[in-house]
Image (cartoon, rainbow, N blue to C red):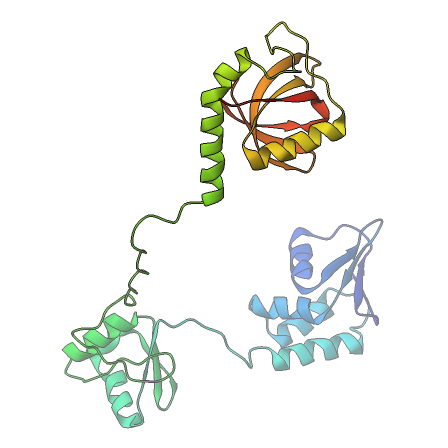
Length: 295
């Protein structure tokens, strides 16, 4: 390969398998083609050091496999990364043991009975172990030492007989006496609809003067849109029963006896005695309306 001063290496042809693997550990492939270009960077050099190489081994590798002298910037890059590599250490430990008396820690570390605990000194007053904290605590007490458990903030953990593993549950909010208050508006509308249904059966057979008899085969009632809206609004206040003509989305016409409950947004919500349920009808589909007198 040919090392260049811009921290790249050019491989004019295919590299031997072992050489290609080693170079891929030390540098990143930047481009491929007739020749492969590798780029050296702090991250790639650190990757090689993490795999076990030393700075001297990297210098020897570059000098042995390059047809050109090793550029000074590349040598500086390797030395700079190697100098900072490993200054910080990251590891895992299940528990630690600390004491202001370093002589006591030295005694525990030298005790052959603690070999299974895999203790290791990090500082004169700190030992770490891969053994879980509960097991470390129990074993040291078995060996005659008197350790105390410590929390994450350094406070001594106190075990009380009445301590609970889970937080105390709060009492639920008291339920108010009796059932919830009824919706008077809804009850009023329901009573109005039921009463309307009682007299609607007889009112259909005896319509008031000036109205047509609402039979299934009869002609639909007709009224102006303004009159229809006004009659609907009045019926919601008075509880009157109305005879309406209605045309659905498919164009099918029908006659219905309803007790309006609410009129808003171009719709009327009413108790339909024909279907025996509460329904909502668009006002623009109602052909006309006539009031049926109650007994």
